Length: 222
Image (cartoon, rainbow, N blue to C red; front, side, top):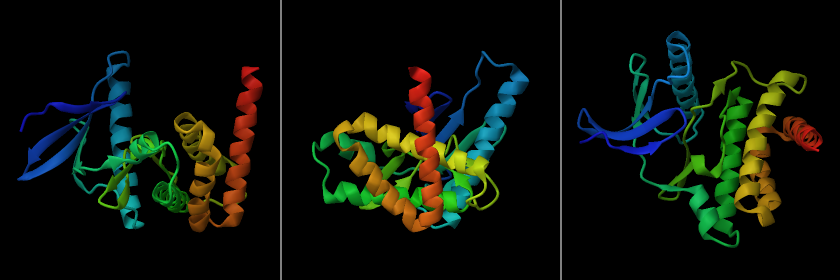
């Protein structure tokens, strides 16, 4: 099987590979010439490790994510299960009105993010583009910007709450970009699933931090 790229992102190339008799998805972080070699190696290595660690932790928590088969820290590659599915973003784009199927997937996505947050994992880019529907099951993908915080958040830990709020703000902004007319409905359903995992107190604290972030942005652009 050739290594023809199926997607090229800001920091990585994705391609399919025949590996030990399996068709796997390979995510390879390519060198960036504008960074010094040592710093570039450090960034690519740390992000590869963080991504693999977050995916393994997510799977331990029962969240559907691609299986990891191999992590190569020389070539900065992760070989993982290839899932042939439909991105949730496609359902949002192809359907003018939000239906019960979409709402259930959005709520499930919020629940997955809540489980991650409750266990000290930040996804980094929780958008409908990184939620993949395979059959009728929703998977979270692309943990390339993830971070494993190492502890469960508390209502008093402002630094961690801030990081969780950044995750939710990314989700909200993606809904606004995709479906401005129904972004609040979608985000409310996302939060319903999130609250089921995080509980009302922590959800309220993170939501307040999101509102604070958005007020700061509005003030800065005036």
